[in-house]
Image (tube, one colour):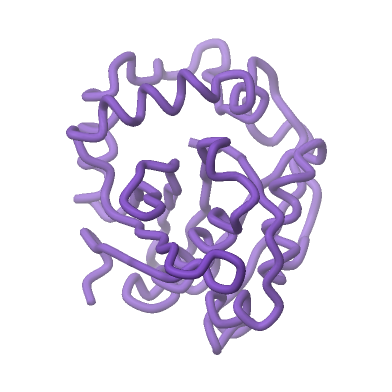
Length: 214
């Protein structure tokens, strides 16, 4: 399996028999579903959305520009932008950001989810699938997730996956219009030789999360 582009699938497991989570590259054809999900979930997502600090580079103003930029970064191997689908329906996004090679072999992960799919274990599965892919085909060594202390839902994701907290970063990311503190979580390949999806299956419940660090 190549690192990118790639399509990943997994069953949601007990409680949702037959439901399948699929991760695939974000595409221009996702424009309508993406805009609809972001519009319907605006109030739910804005408190966790990355914003541009004063003097920073402008973010893409259209979906097409966003996809073009992410595709360019994916070709360079610095970003992997995944769409999350549940039973064929657009449900959100998981993005592997800041891929560093050389002696680091490191990346960070950000994500957001349509609230209609909350409470089904979708995001823990999606994050587990992405991290397993990063440690496998992408040959990365360490993955980091930064979460605002107020975001109890996202904290449940790393808790369910057994990802340990390694530190606290004041004023770490510009979120919802200001510099915000974040709790930092990280996992290395050696810490989950069985894979996170397998780990999740051994102790699954159905909390949910939303977080955005794109």
